Amino acid sequence: ALTPRVASGVTAALGSGDYRFPGQDPGVSEYSQPQYVERERLTVEDYDEIINLGWSGFAEKHRERFTFFSPDQIIAWTQRQTEHYTRERETWDARGIPSLCGAIVQSPLMFLSTKRSLTAFTMDLHRIPDKVEAAMDAMVDGFIEGAIEAAGLTGIPGVFLVLERGGGFYYPLRIFERFEFPYMKKMTEAFAAEGLLTVMHFDQDWTLNLPYLRELPRKMCVVELDSTTD
Image 1 (cartoon, rainbow, N blue to C red):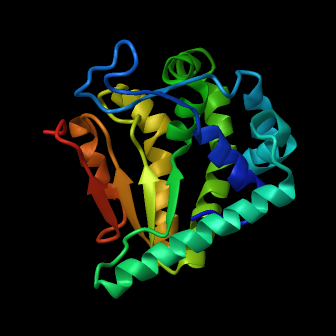
Image 2 (image 1 turned 45 degrees about the vertical axis):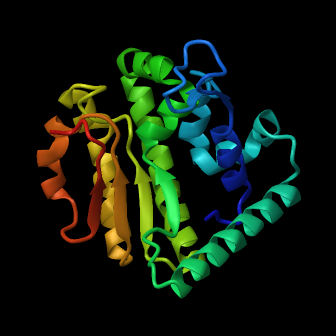
C-alpha cells in the first residue's frame, strides 16, 4: 500500500524501468527470469540534498525529474493503489487466508543501491562513505513513518522489508555492520513497537549475517530466504 503523499508516488516512479525478457532479449536465457535493467536515477550530487531535505523533501522538490504527473494526479494514484490493495486483502480474508504485510519498504542501502545502481553505489560506499551514511540517516525515519502509516491504512499489521543487497554475498561484514544492520535494527524495532510484524526479504547468501539477527525483536520478525543461504 502507498501513503497519500507525493513522495510515495515519486518513489514508485523511481522503481519502474525497463526489463529484458527470457527468449526475447540478448543475454537472457529462455529459462531465466525477466532481468531488470538498472540505471543511475540518482547522482552523487543528490546525496547532499537528501542529507539536507530527507527523502520526502528531496522527492517532492525533484518530482518533475522523475515523473510527469502533477501532485494531485500522484496522490489520486496512490489512493487508488491503496484501495486496490485493501480489496485484495478482503478477497483473501473471505477465503480464510491471512495477509502478512500491509506495507512494503526498502532499507536505505537497498533503496540507494537500486536507484544509484549496484556498481555505482558500491563505489560510493568506498569513495564517500561518510556522505552515504549521512544520507541514510536522513532517510530512515521517513521510511519508518511511511511504512507504519501504510500498514495502518490497510489494517494489516505487518511490513515487508526489502533487504536484498546488504548481505555477505555482496559485501563484507564491515560494510554490513555500518550501512545495513543499524538501519535494519532500527526499522524492525520501530515496527515491533507499533505491533507490526516485519517480513525481511533476503536474496543471495546471508549465512555470514545470520548471527546478527539475534539482536532483532523476538517473535516479531520473519526471515524470507532463497536457496543460497546455508
